[in-house]
Structures are given as structure tokens and as C-alpha cells.
Length: 107
Image (cartoon, rainbow, N blue to C red; front, side, top):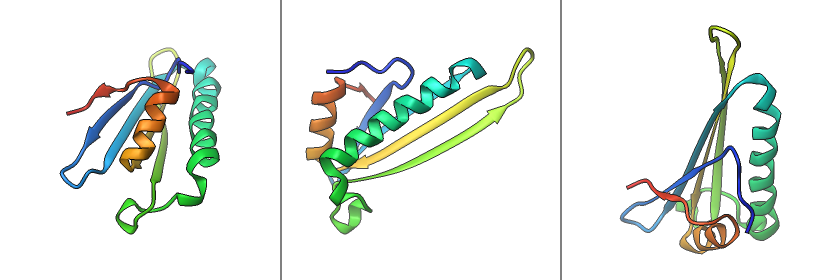
């Protein structure tokens, strides 16, 4: 199991059984590349194990992701924020937890 340093995921599940893994990291400029590397690590893992089944969950796929980045001015430096959301089947969520550990309960 690999521990992520910057991304901390929350897990939620809707009434249709769709799991959502949400993570957000807000860092100073010197850590922005490390956060991007973690995002890439997670997406590379997903593509290796479920890549052929990436697409909208409502269409029967195992996973789909959205990645958003923004930079906000701060007093001493800009803040870099990365938000990664993965919608997933229960099978994907189980495999994710086996690889990265239990996310916190997002409700």
C-alpha cells in the first residue's frame, strides 16, 4: 500500500451505488509539482487496472475522473490548489482502498 502525502481522499456513495472519491490539496509553489506527481500516480494506477473501462459511470464504466487546478494569490506567494474527483464502481473503490488505504468518510 502506498501512502499519499498531499492528496487525502474522502469517500461517499450515492443511493445508486456510485462511489465518489474526492481529494483536494492546496500548497505553496514549491510543492505544486509533488501534488501533480501524486495525481499522476493515482491516474496511472487507475488506467493500469481499469483503463479500458474509463467513462461515465451511468454508462456502465468503472471509473471517470475530473481534475481542476487553480492558483490564488497569497500574501507571501501564490497558493496552488488541485482538486481530483473520481466517480467509481464499488469494484474500483475496493481496489483503490486496497492500494491507497481507507479514505475518510465523506458522508
